[in-house]
Amino acid sequence: MAIIVIDAGHGGDTKVGGSSANNATAPEGTLEKDLTLDIAKRVQRILSAMHDVRMTRQTDVNVGIAARAHVARDAAADVFLSIHFNGFSNPNVQGTETLVWPGTGPTEKSYVLANLVQKATVGVTGYRDRGIKDERRLGVLNPQNHLAKTARCLVEISFITGPGKTNAESDERRLKDARYKDSIAEALAEAIEAYL
Ligand SMILES: [Zn+2]
Image (cartoon, rainbow, N blue to C red; front, side, top):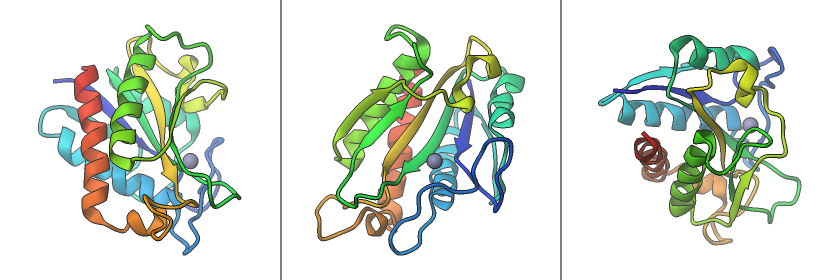
């Protein structure tokens, strides 16, 4: 049994400790913060059968960046997965990417986890593989906020401002399908299992 922390990005109505309440908003009004919690709970449900799964939030509240990481640190977690969705002004942009802390080498545990998460997620979304990115200093992934034993990455599942699998169906509409969301959650859970 491993200790796994699932972090649903954003939440609540105000900025807290560097964490914005919401980032991406889809054309018909779906909020990233609601989708991150939805997917996080599905992942929790799957992994809880085998592991000790902790959540950085369970409801529509915001939690500071460092406090999110400290849930993993305090639990001495094996894995920390932060779940986000992307958004962009150009509605044609679509793709899946996974972020690691700058300078994370390909043999490091966080990169190994990120690679598994990225491949599994692309396998379900079917969107362009935007790869593993390490340009942004994201507080939730900051080594200063974590124990060395914790593999950590942040997945940007898709652009909720973008098209779905076909241009006829937006990503936002696609994400209204519970079976699709279950598939994403299963892929994330399988990636974590594969890492472990
Ligand atoms: Zn986000």
